Image (cartoon, rainbow over all chains, first blue to last red; front, side, top):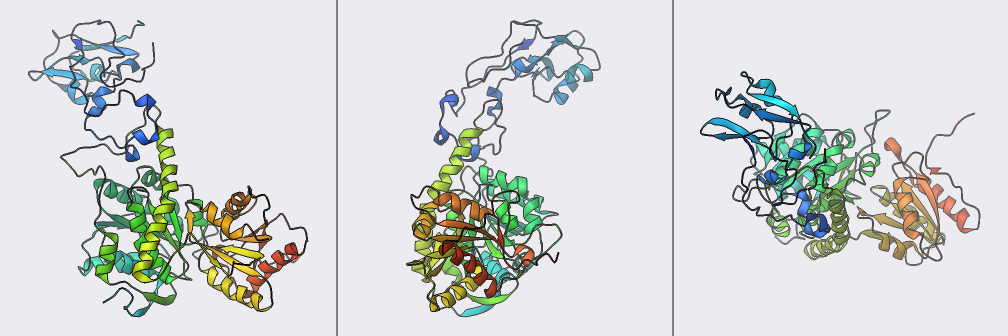
Length: 131
Length: 401
């Protein structure tokens, strides 16, 4: 698989052709702190002490490309217990109306914790495929 | 009361530092007691208990935690101070780099004490000299007054927007920290006015503008750029240190230089010295001058940033220079001060010979006779004798076999 490229904010990377259903990428607002040209920044263009002057912008750092295993969600087996949501270390379980409805492919690193914890076998892991 | 009308007090070096801290009244102090700094923390804790300061005093279980706490506190947006010595300084190690690289303007007094082993509680400079590459500004004081003055000036230097780099200010363990000496304090309100209010940059507690402090450099590789900004801040700090010293001199009449020369105008040979031994060295310089020896001394006040140009200006015309290190760099050509002084003078077309001298490790006494021995080595060199490449040790017991 390809390693995760540096992802400039707003660009899309590490996206794969959709395999199973319900794997999706949420829409993101435009970041307030524009780092789209960060690879060109000299020392003075960075924030003092490497502080990030914007909250919650890790969402712009897409980590989906790190996966070697991808989760597959089987909604017919899901009883909505939400354990996958609580266990996911990357907040990559997408929830609608208090139920898991899929995984955020742009950020899921494929750790498989959700599949391990799901008491109903509603999530299975499958080898990530090369593009 | 004018700034220069205050009485001269008899205090320990630690009391001098604690009084400066009381007048600064930082928002947060997190510190752990360690010999010979203990008295600083003890006195300051009493100020807190007596309501003489508004400081949030955080008692911690180690110096690792003390430095971690002050990093957090400074990042939160608080004016923050601490103090340590020796093993405590060593235990702060990884966090010292964090404080500097996050550009947190912490001011820390370090009472210089030997690093173990064998375990030893007395003065040398091996603790802070070991920390010379942590990214902190280093001010070395000679006496009680300087320990006090550096603490106050340190706040202005660290917090200056051109610098925003933590400052450690040093005083010699026991010789200054525990011994009683003269101190003229500023009035409380003069210190308040001199340091001014603290302005935090991107403070964590500003919930209107949430930020992340200390993020992972990730896969992207900006660490290198941030390291370059640390060096640039060091470069800019020369001007800031001089400006703050100038303002401090207007207030107190006491002017601090990066390096303080003593009888250097026509000196042919000089010793470079840090800390309390400067006083002994001045006495010896005076004795030698009476005999017609053109001896001088350069006192190092600021070691980081390293004042290369000032060394060139003061030492460039000498024929021989002895560099007195109260710390060693084992396996190197000499102590840390020696290495850097010699490097600073290397580019001169005609440079003095430079001798590495080690003294006072683990609090070994340094008498005027020992300083005379050092000058005797320099005199031989000035007379054309080839200098020893190896270190000259002062007051080291000789092998009997």
